[in-house]
Image (cartoon, rainbow, N blue to C red; front, side, top):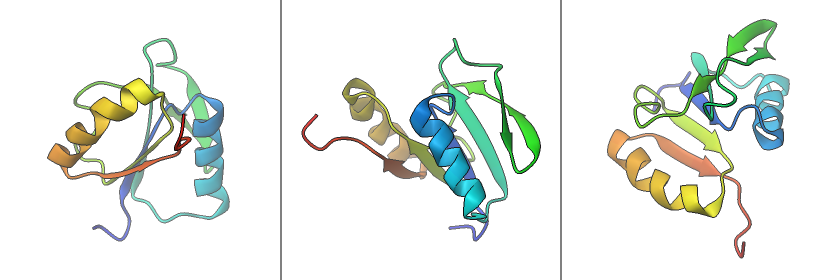
Length: 101
C-alpha cells in the first residue's frame, strides 16, 4: 500500500464521519488525498480539513476507484453490500459497528 494513501470517509457529514476527520487531522495521519462521501442529501456540503475546505461528494458505485483506505460507519443493510464492492476494487475496509447490532 502507498505510504501516503488516498483516504475516503463515507458518511463524512454524520457524527462518526466528522469524528474520523478530526482524528485524522489531530494525529496528522499521512495521506496524499482525502475524499469525503455522503448521501445525495449531504453532497455539496463543505467540511474543513487541515485548514482547507473540502466538498462532500455523493456516494456511488464508482466512489472507491482510486481509494486506498475507506473509513465508514453505516447501518447493517449497507455493511452487507459494501464489502464485496471494496474487495473487487482492492480498497482496505475499516468500519465501526456494534457486533450484535
